[in-house]
Image 1 (cartoon, rainbow, N blue to C red):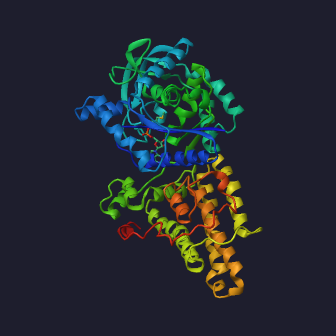
Image 2: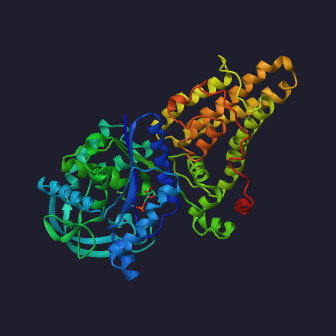
Image 3: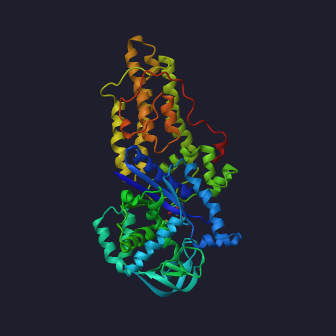
Length: 507
Ligand code: ME8
């Protein structure tokens, strides 16, 4: 199977925040999981540089737009590694190869007869980088940005979106899982059924952007430039290769609902007009509403919630993102829960389990993992459930359901320690084989849990494998009972998630 996943390319008018981290983490979890399954995987992220709001920030700072984006793009490039996200390419829309591709893409639409010239007279919200109708406004203001849109009157080129209404509806009909979750898809369908207006794909009088190939006095409208990144990147991410053959249209776009229309309506129509296949799937997650002011106060110095990484580590942030709000549902989440989850779930459920297991193997068996797999073990059944069900959840983008499933294995293992009471078995020589079995099952269960957790906790999972003397391999087939490498001598593991005195104030 081929799996190509994207995040939106983020605007560089400001620095990254936790909302951007959220989508990037989700995409990384999916990409890592597919790599574990042996799928050919490509993970793209990057930045959107030709927006009017970006240009204005540069102006306000007295910088040439290119100099400004060159500087700030580096803060964005640093985001994925900071989150332990392993991307295959980081695209910037000011990349020369992207510009060349966008021009040829738009030329194809033009040649297809879907572009015409007209005067645009209406409202534009720079915050949204979107043209607005009166219906979009509340008390004359953009409800998202709480500002009055600007009046724009200029000669523009328009894309004949209205001509694609039937083809879009037919696409939605034919591909019932094109947009996920279904309640978002319904929004899209009813919007398109209500009729589509052509949209301007150019801006006159803005010197920042990609000049149109047929009229260099105008630049491409930022969305007509940005959406194309998902395709353009494939043509130059790996020099000498055209990854479109491999990965187009096997793409899954991830984003929040703020940019659903552009992705579910404009983008497929533009692709059809340019003669390309439409994406495989578009997944819309909710918008995190964060009480970040409270966070910064309670953490004292953490003005930027991303600084929580310095306190808790990237894996704890990833874990919180996966579990705080059911992925795909609309909801609000409080970052204060991160301290609680760090301590109770990562520290106690997982960290203590490893410490106790390794300590018992040291104490009762001199550090040698005993025995071999037994048939019918209850831990075997719990591992099998993870092996079979987690991919099903993740194939539905159910990032939260999948981690819940893995965590129930972690909880089963904790219960198994309590129920089997190895400390009691250790006092009775006649029960030595039982103790061997319990220690084996605990170590094997932890090993399998670590492999399954790798997509979520890529820094922690290898530490668990190492503490258990296991090879650092995370192939999904290793999420099976009885794959434990024994005959190694291990030591008691240090805490995976040490208690944080400094973080106590954040709860
Ligand atoms: O819209 N909760 O860029 P953008 C969840 N450049 N996700 C959030 C979030 C939050 N509070 N805040 C941001 C753009 N996001 C365009 C995209 S794509 C061809 C062009 C995430 O910087 C979420 O994925 O405004 C959202 O859709 C995206 O950042 C918006 O990023």
